[in-house]
Length: 307
Ligand code: NAP
Image (cartoon, rainbow, N blue to C red; front, side, top):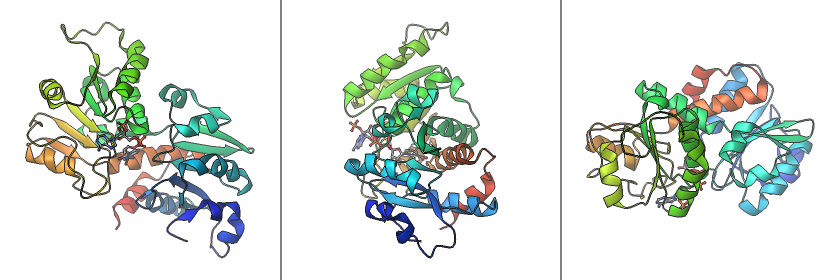
């Protein structure tokens, strides 16, 4: 199997994958995509469940997305995952979108069924399970700050926090308008009776140290859903000087064990985890969508941890 396939390969999938021991019928679309560890967890899972199919990376550029999705039924795909930057654009390209994904406005899992494309989102529920497994807490009990609330993952995570009725939600995004828009969309979830004194339960906040620092004092969980930190040369999205020891810091990035933000959090004495557990749980939920059976979680975890 090639490390990365392209749209050109997908156009003549049988020829491009001739000679494979099992047909490749699942994938992740992304741009970039070479960093994706999804094949590493899904292929052992397929093998251990005796499913005669394999999972690959497809490098699909934004302008190629519509064609690539339309090619999936004729290439006999079971489905695909979507990563940067396709999750929001794909929504309008589905034949059907489940209610949760529609609420979030982002699709990360596609099921091909009877020639139709069905869209789902497993990022939010995956993050929720990851937070529980890393820190032993539930979103509903937390005051959460989401960095990158304007991106696909950030929207999914913020909406999940809202759906689980977290104590407080602070939305931060480099392009502030996107955070403000999302706060407006999520207002409906925060109309309930929980009161935290005069402080609002839902806020969009500009990405400025003077605005973030005082709010971090009354935050339990900081989630980085930006793509800043994926490259080794990236700075931490928040410096150690602004982070505090009482915080739990979850970085959705998993390209390094110790991402720049995890390193900054540890320097500040906070508990921190990278995004590998979210990758595991969202992947397991995708697997369950494709095969309607439990995912072999420990096999997938071992696959992810193998180099
Ligand atoms: P996306 O839709 O392209 O969104 C990117 C987000 O990052 C936007 O909010 C963008 O802000 C922000 N951003 C980019 N560069 C920045 C910088 N230098 N400083 C501050 N903000 C910056 O991408 P996505 O699909 O949501 O993915 C975002 C991250 O989530 C990636 O790191 C990805 O690896 C991670 N993720 C992890 C998992 C997992 O399972 N662990 C699953 C999904 C996603 P603007 O709006 O201002 O452009």
